[in-house]
Image (tube, helix red, strand yellow):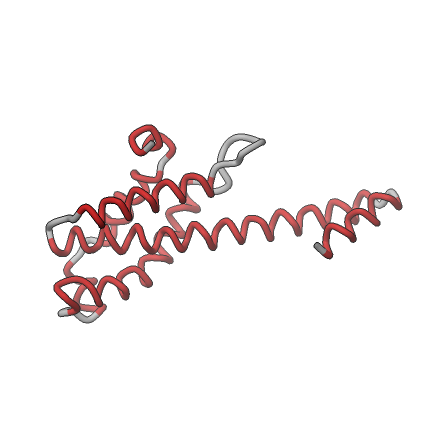
Amino acid sequence: MEELLELKQLLLKGDITGSLAIVEELEEMSKKDIIKTIRSYAIILLLHLIKQQAEKRTTRSWEVSIRNSIREIQRENKRRKAGGYYLTPEELNEILEEAFLNAIDEASLEVAEGLYETEELEKLVDKAEIIDRALTLISPTETDNLT
């Protein structure tokens, strides 16, 4: 809110350079919030993909959680008015890579009723395959299959 008031004052003064600096700061803050939200849903998505691969099965609950996470990631990433997306596939991949550690940690508590330590579970699953699957699921072309 403080930034908006400052932006208003700069615009009223005619300080375009200062105004643009505030706009860039606001854009950065907005993108950080979007990334944080997407990362939270990415952890949930990866958690269930890890469980599916490790246990070689699925449940309705996992499927619903996967679908919900995909929808929320897609909603957060879509630019409403300007069209397009906030994050590129490369940036989404980076977020998934970062989220994987949290997801594997959480999965170690659930897979086989917590039988595996994080490091053991990580050796049992194919990280690259799971991340590729997640990217495929959240790609814009998958939207039609989920709604």
